[in-house]
Length: 59
Image 1 (cartoon, rainbow, N blue to C red):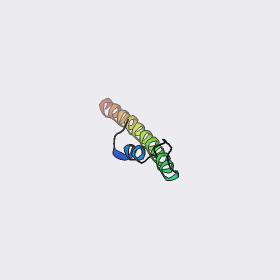
Image 2: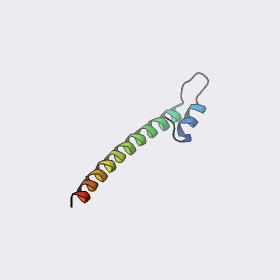
Image 3: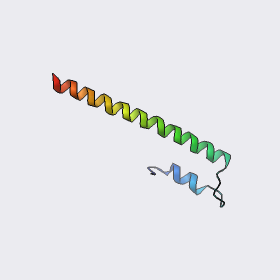
Image 4: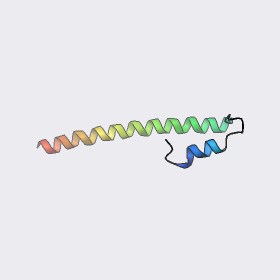
């Protein structure tokens, strides 16, 4: 899943033999970590909204 140009940039800059440079690998790892953190934050916000909605409706 590519939602922005970041992943495309990494793949475009890959050497012809398919290997990533050290900088590209570092960027890919950073982006994967950021993606994981954002997914966790999204899940927490979803649960918080669901609990808030239940609490509001229950009053």
